[in-house]
Structure formats: C-alpha cells, structure tokens
Length: 183
Image (cartoon, rainbow, N blue to C red; front, side):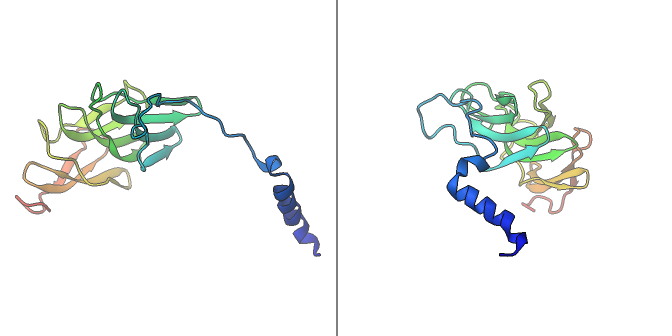
C-alpha cells in the first residue's frame, strides 16, 4: 500500500471502530425556547441568516407569535416583540448590510414595512413607513447589491422597485416603472 493512503485508511478505521473519537463536540440543547406542547408551533422558518453576530431566524415560541430570534454562543433570545402578544410580526426576507439585519415585518400598526436590527430590542427600528397606514403586503425578497438593498414593494398604486442604504432618508422608490400597474 502506498504511504500516502495510510492516513486516510487510519481515519476510516477510526471512524468505523471508534466513531466517538472523531466527534469534535457532543451536541447539546442550548435553550428550550418553546415550552408549549403544541407541535405546530415552534418550527423555525426555512429561511435563516447567519452573520458574525449570530444566526437570525423567525420563530413562534407560543407566547409572542412569529417574531425574529437570534442565537449566539450565549444562547437564543427574542430580538424584539414587534407586534406584542400572540399576533406576531411575521418577519421575512432577512438580509445583512453593514453589520445590521434588515427584514420586512408587520408591527400591527404600520403594516408590512422594512425594519433593521443590531440584535438588541433597542437597536431594532422601523427604517421607513413608506406606505402610511396598513399596506397590502411588503416587497419581494431583498437583493443586496454593493452597499444597497433592492426590493419590490407597493407604493399605493402597485408594486415598484425600491432601494435602501439602511436609513430612512436613503430608502426610496427607484422609479415608477409602470404608473398605476403592478410592475
């Protein structure tokens, strides 16, 4: 047998004869964030966003409705209860820009709008109420291009292309591509 294949053979034998030796760490529960007995609750959304700051995801713990959560090496926590109580803000379309996480959510007052968070309750704010009052749905999934987010969202007359640099002032409709229609 050539000398170059021996380390691979040794690892294969170790894996078969003593699989526990190759595991780096034993899995463990970080925190039980759903203590309800309802199986339909608690399943995280298929979309999650991994950042250097932690993993962000939408989760319904049975007490707050679907809200944004973050898991770090310290554990899991609710970022902020945007729609207090069981209503849940149903965040979606997570994207990262300049160390902040952006998402669409409905706080029960402004309708589905663009929000940002630094992972703390106090650092989770509405970027811009681009459609005052309850708006019918938010935009399509956000696309990061350079240092701007692009998304399709209603302007009161239809869906149009929007961009944001993460600030209210820097969030604007790119153009009214098709006045009065769903562009």
